[in-house]
Image (cartoon, rainbow, N blue to C red; front, side, top):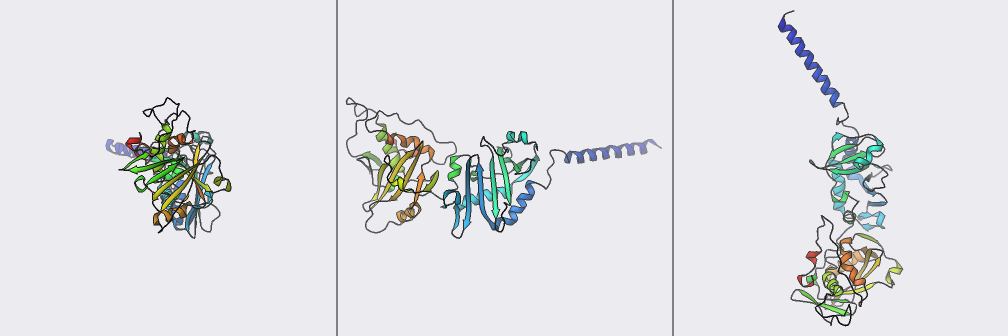
Length: 368
């Protein structure tokens, strides 16, 4: 056997070894096959037009949307209308998830990726999707921690220990762990009257009017500290009035909702706020605290003359419902619940990162 023939045999042997190594590598722990998550996504894509319920769970929280004859509603919130864009965002996000890497299949390590279930830390989310003519979910997925570059998330099928890194995102509606995302499932805003659309605000015996774009208290200021207080001293209650009440109905997206109860109408600690849109139309807002949360009931007030189309449409959404104020607004509203003669400390709160509306932008320069 000459040298060249031996060389060719050696080269062929080395090539075969390399091919085998590659195949073994592909079959190893990081291989991406077409099973598991991929099958669920294919099934969901085929069933997209028949989807009639989407549910998301996070710790003790859950939210479920169902499709009926009148569109989507939140069955876990007594049938309050759902925001269909959010449902579509979650479903499309699920369909677009692509597996990129096989991760751990050991249950005791699931918490490292936030795909453990049940999860007392509230880091994991369970997403269930139901379709017509099926009592079992077409998708039952545990969604874990987000990953970067490229954007993705850790997931596993509920009941299957194998976890995966997937490329894709579920959008804001897929993160039930935050209050802002919970509110993104609720239809809204339920009111959108800017401060420039109001003429007057009545609260606790005081009247505020808008003159040349600025809000001012018409009556003399109530002394909040002691008899020696001067007009130059801070008046947090009036600052809170000017900085919050004219903007109460501006792009109001509730953080949560519930059905109105008889005791809500007679709550002894509620605050009454009358917002005058024009000479013929007002809004009656009643606010009260439950723990750290502030809830509000909205209804048309004294309305005469021709109907205000915008108010009529909003009132249809308010009827029979109580709304939870966004948590970022709570700190600014808290001084209104203090006695008029109490020494107050201005709220030291900040809006959560990523929120679309900044509290400071809602407060006119004269009220800061």
